[in-house]
Length: 258
View (tube, one colour):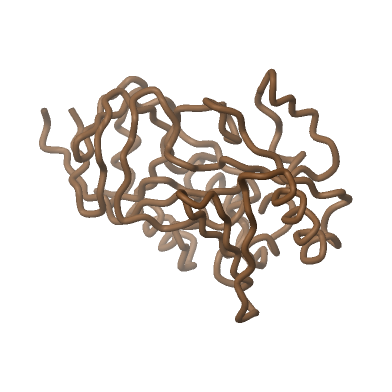
């Protein structure tokens, strides 16, 4: 074990692909499985071709996501696990709308509601779909992966480009505080320990237009990908990993490179 350590500062999941993250204080991670209740649902913009009985990766551009409309960031989501209920808070409204995610009627109701909020930005119809077991609506993979973001790398990037950059633009599951860009030293297959669990590094995360959306204002205001290329000669930020040992992870746990 080396002395390369960092601390977990926040944990996040995204119940609906492309929508706002939900903060967690702790969660239990199972080896070989996805981050719990992350990207369980997606919103099709017209038929996407996704087949629940033969799940395969589908491009994010077939769904209602930030890469296609910054206004998606106006909708803050919370998933109630035991009730299988999704609550959505509209940033400019005081009401919270709730939907039963365990029934097709509830999914259909959510799709119709989303059309009233986002219909101008998408061709539609908007239809909410659920991932079958062992599948998740990831950008590059189908299941079992977690994204890690070093908040100090994001801060350094912001200093170089002359703008304050919110790490939530990069939609990570595990945000940690370590030496800026220390994750660049992790080789594919590198083992990491967080709390009771262990992870294995998969690959750096290639970024897209979704990062251009400000999560606080729901507007495209900063061309993150071109700036990464111009200032750092890269189009990546953060790292994909997979769980190789089950265990509980909490905010303030150490991240240790093994």
